[in-house]
Amino acid sequence: MTEVHEERMEFGADREQKEAIWRKRAIRLASRASTETTAGDDVRVLVFAIGAERYAVELTSVASVLAPVVSTPVPGAPAAVAGIIAVNGEIRPVLDLRRMLGMEPRGNADVPAPVVLLHRKGRQLGLLADRVEQIRSIRRDACRPTGEGGLPARFVESLTDDTLLLLKPEALFQELLRGEEAAG
View: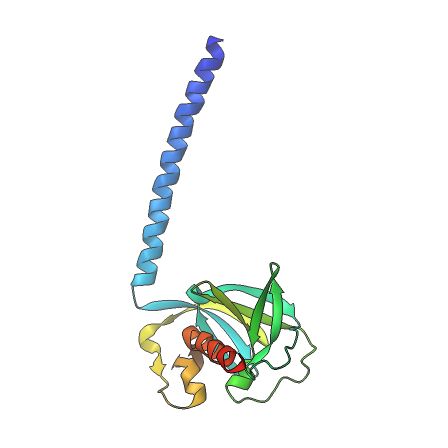
């Protein structure tokens, strides 16, 4: 009986030691993440393409990237809405940036396309993409504002030197809300 008790004590001490190591590691990782996001010099983005245009959205706004799917059209939906998809048993709207930005429509809507799923304040929406390219860092000071005014400019925050258009997720969610209000 004594041997079992001693083993438990050793295990307990080992467990405390492991928990201390995990706490230190968590603190180190959390501080690294906070310095990366507060540095202000670089921002991590997901890069995707629609036709010949390349777009990016801050990684903090991306919930996931879905394998190519076909969205189900919704009669009477706003023009920006390509359709809906089921994600983990929940229905999510999918926006067609081609329509929103005044680009040529996709050739065949029945061909599966990757979807970039964005999240904001408990809501999610998908963006149709032709292809998802990479995750990369861009320098904030390398981004030029695109200006305000026109419809497409409302959705684009800035432009990088290599013609990467950084999107405004909040404007995309606002467009979805605007369309819901008009339909309802």
